[in-house]
Amino acid sequence: MKKIFLLSLTLFAFAIVTFAQSNIITDALQRSAQAKVQEMQQLIHFDNNQANQLQTMQFQFLLNVRNAENRTFSNSRRRIERLQRERDTALQQILTREQYIKWNAIENNIIQNIPVRL
Image (cartoon, rainbow, N blue to C red; front, side):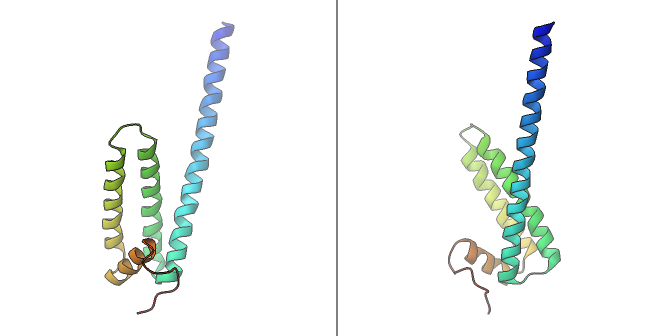
């Protein structure tokens, strides 16, 4: 009986630690997505509605990439590439053509992170 109690207590403690780590990582990814969108909004000047959509999309992308990276299967690289293509498509749907070009140029270090004016 004592062994069962200790085992269940250990499993419960492990579950709490795992859940706490998951929340910390999720919060960090959420803050990262928010910071990226805020920075890009200052540089590209898109509206708040687009910013909200982009923040949700970016957060989901980061979560999906993290999950793909944690897998030990050999297809995780292909999965991440697919996620990047899906993210690119979502960006094109949310942003105007000019905004998308600016976003892509900034993200790929084609131009410096300064406000872009055409």
